[in-house]
Image (cartoon, rainbow, N blue to C red; front, side, top):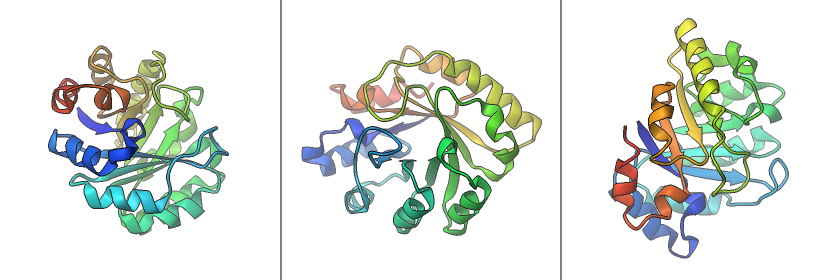
Amino acid sequence: MLVAPSILSADFGKLNDEIKAICTAGCDLVHVDVMDGHFVPNLTIGPVVVNAVAKAATKPLDIHLMVENNPFFVDLFASLKPRYLSFHIEEEKHPHRLIQKIRDYGISPAIVLNPHTPPSLIEYLLEDLDMVLLMSVNPGFGGQKFIPSVLEKALILKEMIVKRNAKTLIEVDGGVNDTNVKALADAGVDIVVAGNYVFGSDDYQNAINSLKV
């Protein structure tokens, strides 16, 4: 299991130190939640702060867009060269076009599904994607409780990926901890995003290692 701590739960008063700490502790990706206050009822960070995160990080960025007007934000963050740039299918009218736009920047494109959105909605996009992010909480705020139905969604999605012979990875974000990560792994999940579980612990390395099942 790859682990991507979400900096949404970090102490922003010492963000530089927090980023370096999770990278030293063995994370695989640094997950960055970008919210615009429109698609979700929260407002987080823009490219100036994310640029500072990129400079501090020794691991690749995993940028999750929770925004309206996805193409604008893709252009805004593309110069930071994250490993993954993900957008919500619920907000995008032309996903094929946006996937290609992201790939043309040399970035791995990913699509996000909200808890209520069925995997069948993106079945015909799987070959074009490098990752699908399943939300196991409703997006917008950290510290929410894990929605167990994401396990069934992960199984369904994994079957679709295998059936279509795609290479798409599955990521899950929301309420992930050491008590549910094994079930996620068994359901075919490749990457977990963990915010409160990592940044709320006294030992980042131990918390990250406990998710590497």
